[in-house]
Length: 312
Image (cartoon, rainbow, N blue to C red; front, side, top):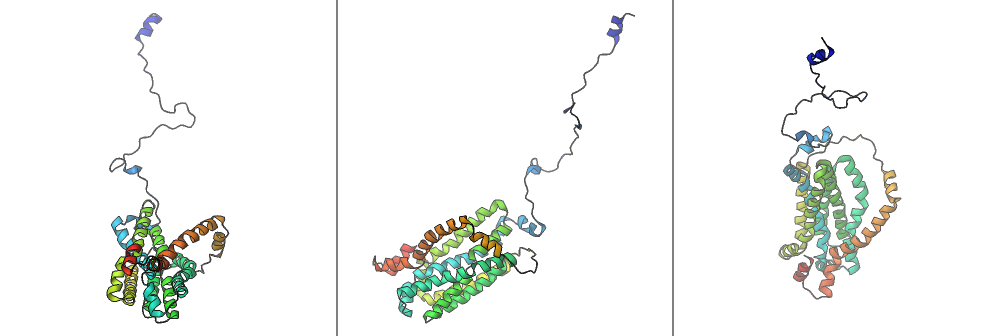
């Protein structure tokens, strides 16, 4: 048989399929992956790693988080704004009943911020250790005591004591709420929750204008502060009973943060922000909390109802 005939009878050679990464040293053949169950694309969703002690927070619905975490702290923040700005509305009554000079009236209003500033750092450290629920509940009780003292005061020292207690009691109104949002809300919802929290709390400044003026005309400013004190007691119960405990276990060791505070005061960025904040916010708050109302009544000659409309 000729070589040509042998070649014709030989079976046709089929080309081998090319393998991915063929010829690369150390490459492995592709393996079949098991099919994932569930809707398509579910395995591609990013899920943050949540510690076991905080896993219940991520599993709570949005409604439950807003109802049990945000709203109780927003109530305390709301009352803090009412306490802070209502002095502008009752400045004439305070000066008339207690025979206060303009300088004494300014000291009474400023004592609120003085009490808040003195305890701001210690209460912030205590919030880190014990949690916002426990600290805010105690502070609301202090605010309630300050409201009662202020409502029953008939002398300058008693009025000052009441305002200082109010400042101490509302010192954690914002920081405790922001801390609770950071603990319980997922990161992708924390910014929205903080915005809602600030919005609801700032409504207290609106309430301390025309709505508070109507109530003052009906029952008097002393009864208004009694009602505010009772509201702070209710806020205490709401915060303590409704807000869940974050469950962070802290060692029973003395809390030391001197080094951290020194680092903040030695940071140039802090002083840049602090100077702007003290100038802009301090000026705005001094007008909103007291001096806007006397200026409107004395210079513009507006009556109390008109002043309340302008403040609104």
